[in-house]
Amino acid sequence: MNINTPSALCIEQLSYAYSGKIALDQVSFSIQPGECTLLLGPNGAGKSTLFSLITRLYDSREGQISLCGYDIKRQTRLALAKLGVVFQQSTLDMDLTVMQNLLYHTALHGIARKVALPRIQQELERLNMFERRFEKIRQLNGGHRRRVEIARALLHKPALLLLDEPTVGLDVPSRLAIVDYVHQLAMEENLAVLWASHLIDEIFPDDHLVVLSKGCIKAKGTVTEVLAATECASIKEAFYNLTQGESS
Amino acid sequence: MNWLHYWRAMSGIIGRELWRFITQRERFISALVRPLIWLFVFAAGFRAALGLAITPPYETYILYEVYITPGLIGMIQLFNGMQSSLSMVYDREMGSMRILMVCPLPRWFLLLSKLLAGTFVSILQVYVFLGIAWFYDIHAPWQGYLWVMPTLILSGLMLGALGLLMSSFIKQLENFAGVMNFVIFPMFFMSTALYPLWKMKESSALLATLAEYNPFSQAVELIRFALYAQFDQQAFFYTLGAFIVFMAAAIVGYNPSKGMMSKKGGA
Image (cartoon, rainbow over all chains, first blue to last red; front, side, top):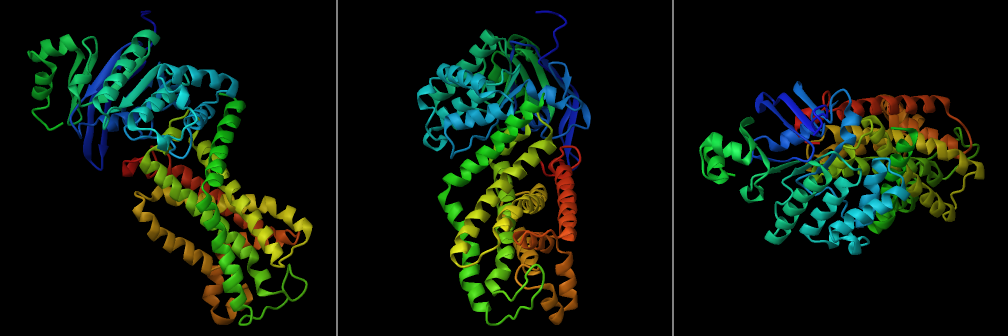
């Protein structure tokens, strides 16, 4: 990798509080292109707050966030153009078809229809959803809706893909299919991925980890590095020790 | 980022809103039923009770139904503005608002596009209403039907901006019903939509003053004059001023660092 290439995501000394209650405290980490980083933490650890700050839905008063070298506060639009997001809750319009939802997204990103249509076809075909493009979202099951959301998040060719617990509520085959697909994307497309989860079995051996608990980073690094630092045999054990057994 | 990006995004937002409105048949019908009931039932009943003097823009004695038609147009736009903001609170709770807010365009532009989309929907409703009213013998000069279009854009934007402002303050969907009662009903009844100002002065000077300074009254008067191919300058500037104030406040409300979004922990 070129040493001058900026990190896909760089977070430095980030803190955030809701009405005096600290949600994030001095959080710092970075993600390089092609890296899949899992943000692990029990419920209430600050994962969703961190996502809201990266997507500029909230504003950080302390610390800095940059995407591909663009500061999210000062160069918001350039930074957001590099970002694809799959939120925890579905953000699809249930009364519109798959195609209408995706065209709406490409319009928001200023992509011409003649460019958008082949991209939509490509992304939907990769997820085996092209045949269902004229179905309303309401008619799709949870796993298929998630696939559409992932396809949508990739349409404007982002450098960083954020996924906020995208597999919650899905059955095991749908969950595994999404986990495999996203890891494949990171590898083949050199896409940086930040995946918030509290499910240990979504981790691949080559993944990077950031363990968050009560707003603080408890551990970060590759799976091997985290295991070595915590002197644990498994990520499950390491996660339990780091989060002091908080319910996940 | 170029103007084409802005154009595509705005077309996308307006197109989505129009499509949703057209395909949601119940919403279309209910948006029309409300003013039509007022016209066919309330106005017919009130016709005998309320005597109307000749006041501009009318040049002759008019039926009460004719008088309240601009008020009912305002009502359509008022309800539509609130409905749009209600859908924004819903979208925010359900998450689809997030997709809009994370796209790489200035937030003021996204809010303005959303507002324009709602305004176009309301104009569609108004013209269907005017069409039905025409068969009920409520006729305006044909130029009036054209003149009223730009005023509907302004009044729709003003009322939509008010809804937008409210939606930026409302934390949950459940809170919306209360606010609707505290805003829609006082705004509608304390206005010139149902009774002229001079008539109100006869019963309460205070009420008449409140009605006079109510931005909804000014929007209704703007529509009333436009429907007769006339321009009410005072109402125009008042409505424009109200739009600018509401819109600026809504933009601040949706600003992640300054507005309510930062305080309520939801976007």
